[in-house]
Length: 345
Image (cartoon, rainbow, N blue to C red; front, side, top):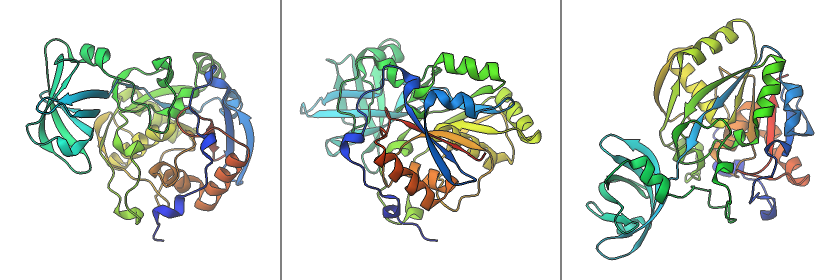
């Protein structure tokens, strides 16, 4: 079937877009999708302990969001320019999404905080992408922590008082331009309960980039070009996952970024291997799944690659039905919103 981007649209009242995180991470509502029986039930996130069993393997993305949004001025003219750092390249070069990109030509220099940090455009890309060489004295990460801003999605209008609320409690490896938001619901206490129950928790890394949050700009789904994102899987994680597959244990992924990592590694090797690489994997209905028995995910934007991934896993009609139910029941949507647990059980 030829899928259209418009096939994945749904009606979402603006007031259901969560603007702030809940005080208690684990008190979010959770729509539990029983994929085999095609039924769902309304629960809370802390009930996840009841749905994971001894022997299950839970995979989480331990990436940490960097303060990737920088506001500066063009040295020649004083024009205001915004950079979103997407991916670190060799020699202090970063791939960036540039606001007001038309004023950033080859050789343009952007100054931040009176020149504490400067960025020179060394390559022009499409759709606002630029490669910028960073010019500074000292340690870049320390300068970025001082000058950068948390890159909240544009639909969040409220100021975030505590930047750590846009990090998972297990965030470790710096590099993301956005949070793997399904993980925001977890607390250390929930992980303790899961481990006591016999659930094995393992980490992979995928640095969230443009593909995770950029809107689709093609009507034919097959014409969409995913942006590359960097991932890593350790030997320990690979060994645990291979053993789980061999023993018939269930594998659950926290978030679409963990899913993309698992599927990317499997597609590359036909099993799990210690590796690093880049992925442009685009999962939409018709995709042949290999790795997971379920996932936890937030509610995604209409016409996004992420809702297409969910539709690929649970079916197109059932996905839209579940989303209509979530709207009717006034679930909170997107990054700081509620979540959905999908299980093949």
